Image (cartoon, rainbow over all chains, first blue to last red; front, side, top):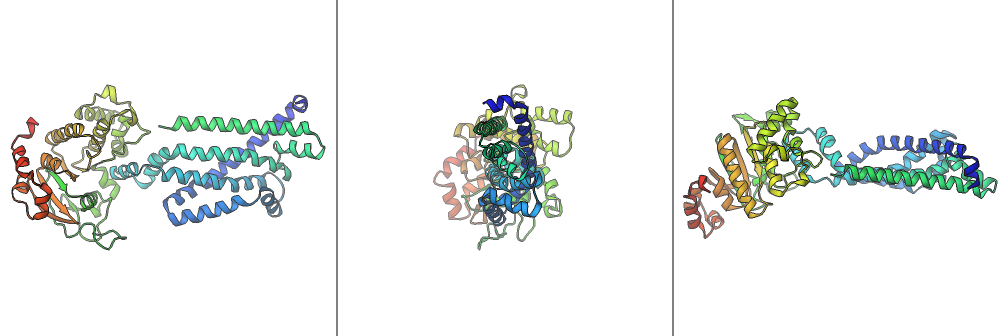
Length: 203
Length: 248
């Protein structure tokens, strides 16, 4: 605890970087995963293909993926964000697919029968009905990203991982402990906040 | 017409005219094609061949979405939108049609009174706070919101218990008398058909086997299938028909 007490401002600074890394990755990942999930939920074949690719990417060890990306894009935050976006796809797409496939078919039938267009049915009926399940995917993805983002420090992308790598390099367990504690606290906070959101949107 | 995946057409060789203002009931066992036939009217199912005309106009020449907004639609599972209140559910088609809030609100209250749910008590409830019978009433109100000239009902009362079903049947009969809306109603329940219909359309295996007023179907079944369907109780049922609807 001595490191945390003595260098609180630095830990807070790195925590901020970590949050930004996770949030930006999550937003970019959602922009990709939601349309992919809609296609995958609608079309059996496309769905199988999309989930297979996302699943395969998910199995690449994170250090290996980062090393590959560094070779292509170079060091830095962009590379880390790309890696995190790739990892989040699997979880997010699954959440969107599970949410949409779980929507009561009677809701879709009545929406279409009452004269909703396909787009209105999706936006006004299917998404709201699928939201709790989709948010579950977002929650799991967020917690995973908080953990994965610690590795980003290895390629100069900042974040709480900096404390872990520095601590390992200088044999300073107190520093490692400070980084681990902050990352765990962030993961738990994100988990609780998103659980609350899930409850709030449940009808 | 036929589904792409099926070798046998779901509905075949149907020539049927329903008069404006009529309460027509499509009656038959499950899988006979009655729901499919109903769903061709609002183009949820497109026939592989043949035409469906409303007021002399081919439904395929109209935009499907715009067509459906002018036709009420009620299904067994009700399908109320769980994230909307009762008022938002009932007002959903007026909103699609661009009515302003005052007009929609007034119409919602009018409809809730029509189906005998006190607007002040029910307007702001969520569907999960309704009983099965109340939810189906709201489903009917939602279908009637934009004053459709045609109302399609697909086994609307099959999922509620007998007592609630009887009261819903009374309500829809009254609504039909009051509004004069043309109703096409699908059921496999013979008693329900006899009770509600001006005209019964008996279907089997994708074909219409007989059409006529309830009394005709009972007294002169066209073949063994219809005779078996209306059953051994035909005489009792015929007697029940002689009681005027208003008393029931």
